[in-house]
Amino acid sequence: MKIVWKLLRKHISPVQFAGFFFANLIGMIIVLFGIQFYFDVRPVFDGDDGLIKKDYLIVSKRVKVLSGLTGGNSGFTAEELQALREQPFVKSIGEFKTGDYKVMASVNMGSSGLDLSTQLFFESVPDEYVDVQSGEWRFGERNDFIPIIIPKNYLNLYNFGFAQSHSLPQLSEGVLGMVSLLVTVSGNGESRSFTGRIVGFSNRLNTILVPQSFIDWSNSRFGGSRPKAPSRLIVEEDNPGDSAISSYFREHALEVEGDKLDAGKTNYFLTILVGIVLSVGLLISILSFFLLMLSIYLLLQKNTQKLEDLLLLGYTPGQTARPYQILILVMNAGVLLLSFIAVSCIRLKYMSMLTAFGAQESGSMLPSVISGVFLFGIISVINICAVKHKIMNLWIRK
Image 1: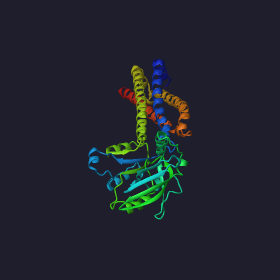
Image 2 (image 1 turned 90 degrees about the horizontal axis):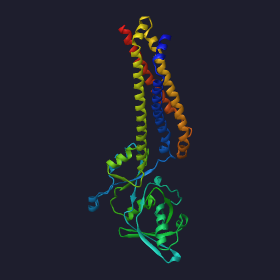
Image 3 (image 1 turned 90 degrees about the vertical axis):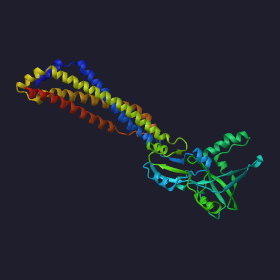
Image 4 (image 1 turned 30 degrees about the vertical axis):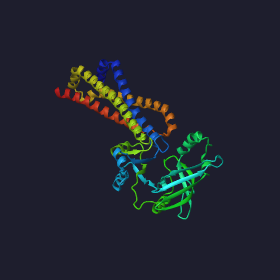
């Protein structure tokens, strides 16, 4: 055994060994860092308080040129709704219902002497999809009051567009909530006046909302005889970062309001970026692994005659191969330990920034530890078996 160690120390180059060691170290650090960073950054995108929050998508069919000219139907059929409900990224679906009648609203601006009147439209969604909490959000058939929710950006359009151009006062949400509207609904040869008031401002729904109970009642009285298929849907996502969402909508010619699909694109970009980092790290590790194997083989080849003599003197293949195998284990263990230390230090630097975006400060390094031990085991076993195979060939030849 001591003779084999002397042969190994005599013929191995410290500079060459250090080169293999640091190449393997760099590759292992890149691989473990990529894996650890991926698991640390995922809560930033997928968590409830993360950058990609669980949200709702407003989905409609893409309007084509011919359907626009010919008045084609853009509503969702029952089969299309069922197919969408069965998608794994869909948690629930709500349908937009539109008032099938004429709506006229007017308001007196008081001291300004300006009366405003305009035609409106009403829509509704199931109450669980409304992001405004109000005790007045209800309607009874014998009640002449209609609660209304409008998008918050409508108020911004008035304050910073219409009001300034017409020298009108700007309105806060509280003031606008005290303004009463005269709402006249007409259809089927009937008309009825209601008092409307804005009870909230939505950041989710870009439409003029009234309770679904009002839409159902008013459509049955003032609307057409045949119910219309919903032309818009509100979809609650199960996983906003799922790249399958944008793929499905693109394949089925569906459009989404706003930039909500950017969540899937961001997640896809993150996955690609981490994949590139892992690929580079694995490539460096594989190259350093093969260089180490080549170096060990050259050492064995250089000492072939002396190793054969040791085998003839009664040394077993295991005794002859053990110093080389121990060298490999020590080097791989050193690489693994230093990689853990390096990744831990890097992680301390970026976690302080990620926690501000929703990452868990108490997250563990278990992903990188498991990956590192797995890679250490695989590489070491392959190296040890390769050395043993080479020594066994010499033993058989003798």
